[in-house]
Length: 302
Image (tube, rainbow, N blue to C red):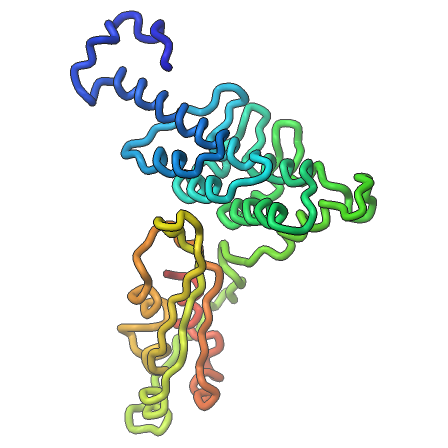
């Protein structure tokens, strides 16, 4: 509870309304204590309830200067049901540092390395926690240094010189999580300085126009979204089959707009990849404009 000495100039019994700063300080302390206790007790329901409180203000764990996410990723065995909503609802904590300058990725990798779980469910949980952290970081931050100049990977054995003495070095599967991570952040490809060319619609009296209007293509996106009922991240697919003309030439549409209009409205969507398929009989339409601006727009926007 908040020390009485903090408010010695006020009688604590006198709190006029819910806007009073003492009320906010006491409420924040209670919520913070319950959140950290929920994490340490592995009580996912309590954590989820506290995160759902309006105007939530969390006071960090002063012992070690830890955010709730720092505390959650250190759980052994890990608890994905606790880590996932913390990442989804407290994005700023992903890059916060503790009193040694370590971000949560430092702690998550250290927990996996020290546990060295065999292949199975526990290892999969560690892998999911580390992967989900990295999916919500910039790739340039994967090697972020702490106050001692150590990256999150510093504990792992050197790939060419294993010194841990275990039959299966945990460094192998932990490093593989980074090597196989999907390219879901930032531009997938560097564009040419001139940029993509704008597709030109075929004349309306041409056979190519009729083919584009009557032939359907496919545009889809695959993503992760947090499900409120199961309290887990689930895979989603947004799939549409518009005409080739709408995908490529119609200024009212285009792949990016088609996906945006058809997308379910739900929080914390983590897009993994998009898929655009144009039937082979439209090769004449695409060969002159590759990549076309509308297809490139669907990769960069939405």
